[in-house]
Amino acid sequence: MNPWKLDAVGQECLAAVDTIATNVIAPAAVENDRQGRYPEAALKAFADAGLLGMVSAKEVGGKGQGLRAAMAAAERVAREDPSAAMVTIMHFCGAAVLEAHGNEQMRRQVAEGKCVTTLAFSESGSRSHFWLPVSTATREGDQVRLDAVKQMITSAGKADLYVWSSKSSNGEGLSSIWAVPGDSAGLSIPAPFDGMGMRSNNSAPITASELRIPAANVLGEDGAGFDLMMGTVMPWFSFQNASVSLGCMEGSLAACVGHLTRSAYAYDGSTLRDIPQVRGYVARMKVRIDMVRSLLLDGIDAVENGREDATLRVLQAKVAAAEASLEVNDMAMRVCGGAAFRKDVGVERYFRDSRAASVMAPVSDALYDFIGKAVCGMDVF
Ligand SMILES: Cc1cc2nc3c(=O)[nH]c(=O)nc-3n(C[C@H](O)[C@H](O)[C@H](O)COP(=O)(O)OP(=O)(O)OC[C@H]3O[C@@H](n4cnc5c(N)ncnc54)[C@H](O)[C@@H]3O)c2cc1C
Image (cartoon, rainbow, N blue to C red):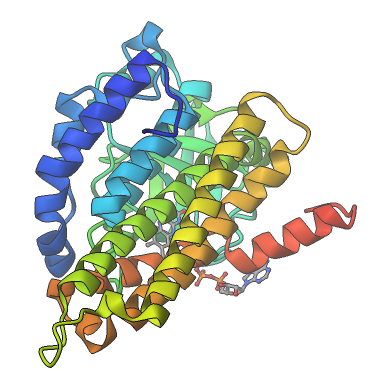
């Protein structure tokens, strides 16, 4: 039974995601990880199935789905390949911002699957504190000049449109958000990504030097970037990132149980799963996975219904899932023993990929601080 409670179109979308995850993403996951190869085939399959426009409005040619369907898709893809899932969710994050604040042409391009997008927020100067960009936007007539050193951007060099943060061009507020075409003059990728995990998502640095875009490419008001980050980006990123962690845990558990079932001691024919302590770890993994799923289902319900605790759930979702994923993947490595170090057993890729969520902004330690402040009745920022 699928727990996401999607409408009929959402169920069709998820069925299409499932087919692509099984036939395109799973067979390529190991080699993409080994080579650090971007999941082009998955994106093409998503585009062909109309899924890049899944969260775009029907009026511009999209499927009209929301965050709930994006979470379901993220979980399904991450079960096979968390790295491809990150590429997918960053596209949906960008798409959600463009849906809310982009012009019709941008919205149509995303809806029609002609445009892969991502968030270009993190910078060398403000590191994980994405709400305080130090890169600049300088108004020049009807254009804006952007100069920036972005530090790790999923789909760097691959995205057609970056949802880009900078200081405002008018001195107002903490930041502004812009739509920056991927082929803009002045945009460069100074070094390729060669990561420990999430190896196929091209999370490379991006430099902007005298990059010019139309001033009309501002998303929301110039100077109102913080509101857009908190109002749109935070729920979309937090819940989807948590869903990637959920899928990462499920993929790891499946690989783990497969190994425990297959691996026997020749002297009596017993297998690893016959050891009660090993089963205890399997049970702990399952309990954590289902706790996270329950929190996410409740959290999306809180957001959709404008519940009082919606903001708290947004803050909790990513950190709860990220930290659970660290624990679950650690347990998978433990009970699969020395064999877990081998790539063919299939848990070490999830283990490596699982490390990313807790250090992606907002990092887990910052989220615990924010939640603690909220619970103590203090201002979060
Ligand atoms: C695989 C991957 C993909 C990414 N993709 C994108 C992307 O598409 N777009 C994008 O904009 N960014 C992306 N990032 C960047 C990411 O969002 C973070 O900005 C980055 O990982 C933070 O690393 P840092 O070394 O700058 O952290 P730092 O800011 O140096 O923090 C290091 C540590 O200090 C502590 N710390 C920092 N701040 C606080 C605080 N306020 N409270 C408590 N403790 C704190 C935490 O323990 C934290 O882990 C990606 C990162 C990864 C790993």
